[in-house]
Image 1 (cartoon, rainbow, N blue to C red):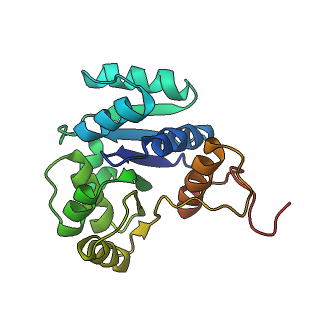
Image 2 (image 1 turned 120 degrees about the horizontal axis):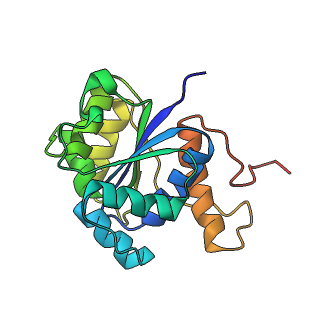
Length: 201
């Protein structure tokens, strides 16, 4: 069976903890994971998770590996690296997940404004008709946000807002994070046991 390849992109919206947990689970599923982090994404990782990451791509890759564990095939690409394989449709991954997705990133993807590797990779997913999942974390939403989401949804993009459920009786912040990450994994057909499903034991 072919190893699945996922791109996880971290932007400057609040909720970078979702991305870190998602990367862990994708690696645990034996997938290959490529990671992108915007400058604002690094700032949020520092502010919310206390992670002082940065520097050359190989340095960030090692910082990532120390955080998520050594399991699996993990690669980091800088957002200005437009020569990365994922910038080409001939090397398109199986799916791309933007977690969390800022409204700025969402609007640029919606407009086809591919000014960096993240936006170009998302454009590749659209043109190659591959799964693209966006996890916005913003409230309240204005009409511009909603119009961009509707446009992308009509193009086949999965919009999975970071809205944890409570029917599974969460007991910790980790339970709330796992619920959202589980919903993202469901969107790309990756099996998991991160939360109790409605009606399940």
